[in-house]
Length: 392
Ligand code: PHB
Image 1 (cartoon, rainbow, N blue to C red):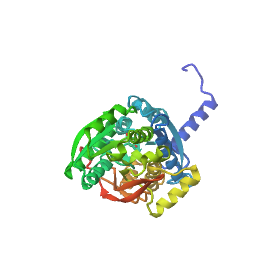
Image 2 (image 1 turned 90 degrees about the horizontal axis):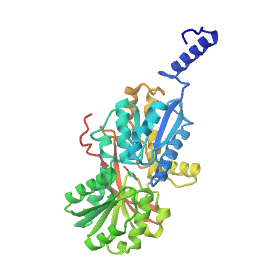
Image 3 (image 1 turned 30 degrees about the vertical axis):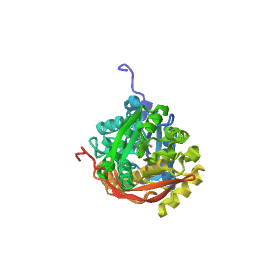
Image 4 (image 1 turned 60 degrees about the vertical axis):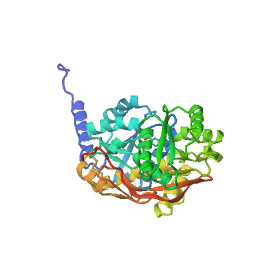
């Protein structure tokens, strides 16, 4: 290099690079906002990841492909619901692709790894599903938001519902990882506050679906009721196995609503009548739900589920932030302030952000009827996660 003479062309190239860099900086209307989807596109949660991306893209399309006046450019990483790969995967988006915003993920263990990197690099992160309590608890940060739920929220609501139904002794069953443990933790809190007692906690490693030994144990424990956390492909298998073992005739099964969301087509008869709690349901009558459902059907020829809705709302939340800074995604303080203040007109019903950046929202009791999770009532109105350990 040192012996090379500068040719005019090189100067031009240097100038062009400088201009490009300037265009990527503050307030640039030309450059696209880089959105990095880190989601499971394979494995037991693959359908969930796809629904989230579909929902997000639908909202952006409805806005003419722009948020805050800027076009979006998408980058994608399949996180495989594999916590051990979370740091490497999130760094592909943050360091290699240099995204402005991370959107992800589904699996709580992966989300914890993502949130750590987002915190350290101050990359804006919108979590459109994973419920890991710590994401808006001990790990809370100004640049981290969630448009879904904390694992505690639906669990706590179901504990309350089951106690009110007069169940006294319950067995819990879940995959052994953060989401399952915390969902059961919320359930225990609500159930025991209502006078119930958890007789035994059963677990199976994620994402195993060999349930027979556990079903045999439940049959011999004879609890009044069973509370479970399963989702995606595993939820399909569990609900079918529970019915095939005949347990649905003797011991009522309840769960966080993921048990029956996006799964009813595959679960068929085995799911009929199941009661679950979630921040979404079929049969809601708000105006946004109607346009969302129609738009999603038109775009993807499929009914939306809770995951699609959470992805759509991640788009809405980012839109609220970018509108406030006219697309200048690097102008983080006012962008974050706008996201904190936003009331999201969600298909679930309007919601706001807690101080820890988790939705304060109604949790519905739903009942499976045919292919629908029909809303029964509001189990708890305006439920906020306790955000334990969040200092913000
Ligand atoms: C989670 O890991 O937090 C999780 C995964 C799937 C769900 C809900 C929560 O449906």
